[in-house]
Length: 164
Image (cartoon, rainbow, N blue to C red; front, top):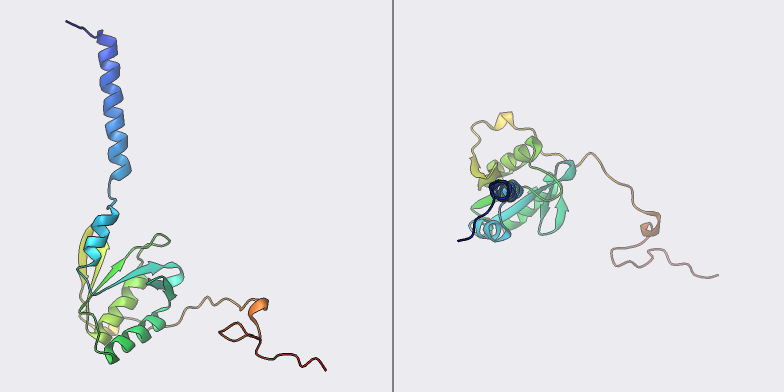
């Protein structure tokens, strides 16, 4: 029969407990990507929060006004989603301004709005539209780089030189 000395057994038990504690701390509150994808498929549209009170939709950064235009387009095309999920992006958490803008959009376009708060799915229901601020464009606009000035969307110089 093989015996482990008392000091070694305590050390081994302490090492296993520390490893389990570290693994538990690393994964607490984190969902796997598969769980997030499964959650996203239950909703008609998934929007992510972004910096400066903006949103990410299919990789595009949109202001609340731009997102409203997108919902207006979907409504005109009769493809309006019944439910929308607001998720935290890698770059920014869901803030009060994100929730207010999305609540305003849910009233204007008639979809049910959900968001993930601390691992629990919450639905936002607005009782009084007067409490919500009006949608506004982003206040922090960046200037166009010098290399882009005078060009069109195709990248062609808008005012070509004639070479006279």
